[in-house]
Length: 275
Image (cartoon, rainbow, N blue to C red):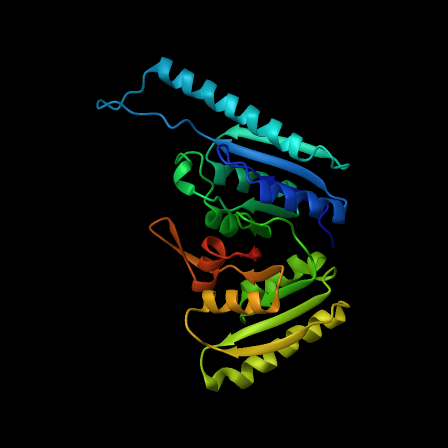
């Protein structure tokens, strides 16, 4: 398995340079085609009577089309030195709906976490958590201050769940190129240590059968699991965290598990997430 096609999302008002750099590095390594995508809708004010003036709507769509054009130009300029195939897709649509729809054409999605979401209009904002939960593809979330993506060390955040079991096969192309793999499970209490050791040992054996050697360890719980995992990744100098993404909907809003929420909102390490 490899990543033959990588899809990168660009926000209309904040082009994620880190996500573009990471996409270019990945595409060079895997000889991938790169598809750039963006979408948005006009942030149209509605009058008290609920009506929108047609001339206002027309002007707003014209501004949207111009913003999409600038976004495409930036995408092509950022990847001008890339020797592989490029494609651009865009539409007047909610960003997450469009990205999820187009994800059928890709093996891997790359999204950049914005430095300041307050600068994005509500109809231009990609809800990364929604994309992870709905896309049916692995999503690499790139923090706003990432400069590049190395493959020296990858941390696998293990939890005995369907999401984590799906994450490993989806990450295999990355795992096979890593110099060092570390499997970590955080045990909720001391009574879980023995079972957790068996689980991470099984994962290490599975990876070994794919010619991917890995070390495995269990850490006792010490506070918020997301922050603890980030500290473990920092200590190990991990370049990427691979994890299953956990969440459930409540009143059409995703409620995320602690580790997933941390990786989506706060992590300083690139995270490959799979639901």
